Image 1 (cartoon, rainbow, N blue to C red):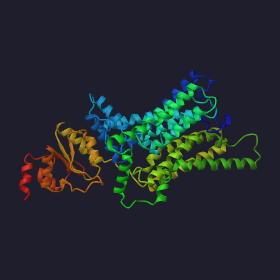
Image 2 (spheres, rainbow, N blue to C red):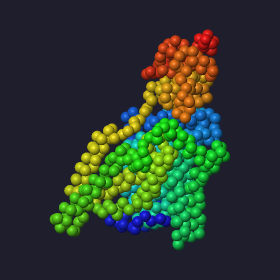
Image 3 (cartoon, one colour):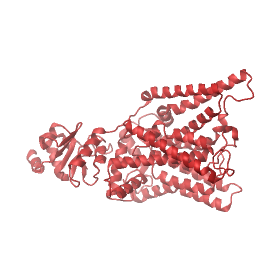
Image 4 (cartoon, rainbow, N blue to C red):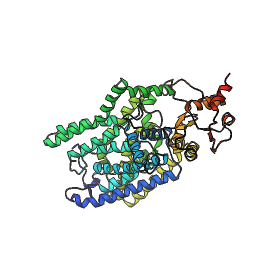
Length: 545
């Protein structure tokens, strides 16, 4: 369909086991199934290791998404949040909460189990994409295994955020239009699958929107190419239209619901301006923020190609000195990397679009590397593929040198990574623990007033799992006027508890709460749970002059 480079031939890896016509689809089905199972099992092992090491959440957004999905399951509506957040993740998780609700409550644990399963599905999509891009079984397997294991992929494979599934769907879409080096051209119907993947991706996150535009252009170019049958042209043209359906639908919805087609951009920009009133970093730093974040967060993925190039240069230079002409000391990796040129160009265009959006205050406010996951997945596929080819085709001496170089790269990454990272993960352990305790110790329909110190209260709400009965005591949205916490003094707390009819109070253990409600029913870290005093409303009236 669209060929990124001329066929490099068997020397660059060929298409052995790729399901070529010579081998037949039946012959390749069993190895493909085994490879896919291996990738999924490896991803499950990586995810289990990440959880065993204590990772639970990237940021408070993880908990916010669970709370909003719980609210959707409690009261479904077309636009789950009414904000700039796209709807598909809430539809999916909320629907699963509804289906599983007959057996399990919509708790944080259920949300994390769903995230674990979505991580496995993402790994499967990445492997299929790698097969489509390379046309080589072993190359795809090596790349997919690395793509499922590098740190950000590992963490996002268990986090309750949609970045990894979204990036995997985007990669799947781009790969559906790529002709592997040894051919044959992909069937036109494959582009329709890619377009449908982009509908889900573009209604989950904003990063795939530039990918959808490029995909539509690529599909139309392929449809216009000479030699295409009418049926293939129709499918490719339809794929181009379908790929843009998500962004178009969201823009139309914002125009209908909010009176402004770009309402979501205005919300994101207003939040960024409220968080960083002075504008934050300068224009030049913003333009390079995403590439810098990629290198800072995944240095091993960038150092590995450098190590491969250096070892290849050294091996060939040594062979030239010794006049070793009959055998090559290192395989021709540059030609083997050509299949990644077209997907890499799409990822580069996506990062350029994100950088421009960041300059205009229309990009994510934290952990920018999350938005570059498509590029990181592609880089991991290429590094895994080329490293496997290098070990397979290099001379024994070059193989030993390559192994040592990759170990050095891994050591450098492990050593320097803690010093490079700007933002750290926040598991909100105490907030989650008190939410679980409240779920166990209070009746399901009892109203609770929850203290809002920072966005950590979202972890408490997610663990509690009762969207209809939990009431935050105030808003801390930086766009809203600042409001003092009602937990700061007994009179304010009594009034606020009476306003929402709270039967229980959930907040930090401190004198202002103990003076009103007495000793807590339970404590977890600095947090406690109290029964609200029955006479709190009258007590508030007496305490107020």
